Image (cartoon, rainbow over all chains, first blue to last red; front, side, top):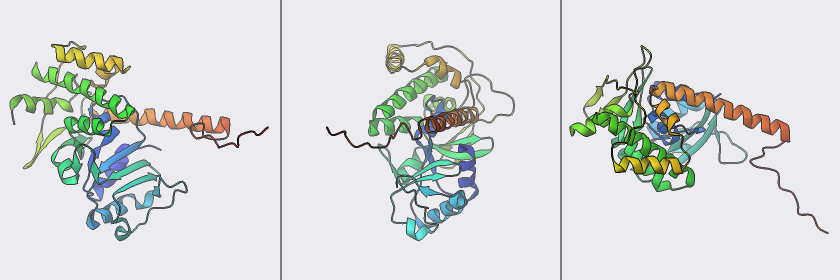
Length: 163
Length: 118
């Protein structure tokens, strides 16, 4: 069952440092595009990785990009050498990314984050300008479509903000 | 922060129409901490105010983006948008599974067949 809020709730509960990026961040801004994975940018540091293991470890996390879907090591030391983690869990797909194209690594991504309050769940979300920049940097057709939609939303918000 | 930018940041996560009672706002994260906003904006259809807006709108239309859906989504709160998305994703997953059940394989990734020799 897909449950973005539940995934974010778990990350918060275990005090994982993260910024919501990608399609799900776009959904929060008003994008109509359906995305299957929850993309978060995280620092791949041992302490944060240990929190990630705590947050997702009981959700049967498996490596999605490997055809055999081997289970994720529930050991921060083994994960420390990785740059990204593409997981499938019992709550849906979760991608943990160390950097975002067009924006940079976690420190830079965090600098471009705003706080979203979702029913009391506060999470950091990449701001709309950076989200558009990231989409354009990746440049696949679906990213360009997402960027165009976000530009419409940004323009719409600007017009209302100016009123 | 310039006032215009600040207003944009407020607007970014605010519904354009008053949401149902009890739904939360979003906040701009500034280095010292959180600032919470409670701005509610009036609803209105797409009324472009300048050439740049027209260009953005036309590009979206060229991509096949339905701006009425965009306008509708902007009347929702972020958590409503998220819930709506997750419901849509559930439908996508169910339809995909129905396809797999029907064909006996994932039609997005059909099994490889050997070319016929003759």
